[in-house]
Length: 128
Image (tube, rainbow, N blue to C red; front, side, top):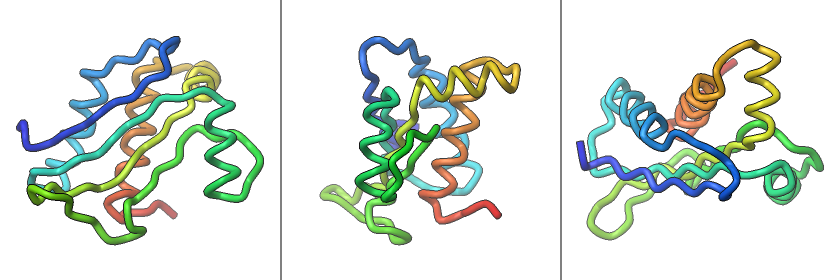
């Protein structure tokens, strides 16, 4: 479904399976009956960048495994060409490695878990 656009930004030193990320995002959107055209961006960064984002947007001086930014908290925005822009998911690769190791799971599986978590936030489906 080419209606789903998933730009992925990865800091160069991290080895990320882009195809897997794209298929996970598509799978979740389809599960939740989100029809395209839709865009979700994913960024994979280091701890320093994540800490900076956390400080700026959450007021917390700490790194975290994931942040998701809805484009207009709670409401989806449409860009030209009627693309539903859900927002951005930012993942800290060093945190993924640490957690995958602690939880004895594959890094790609941990990334998928976080992608799902972040995307559900963007869809307004919060845990707890």
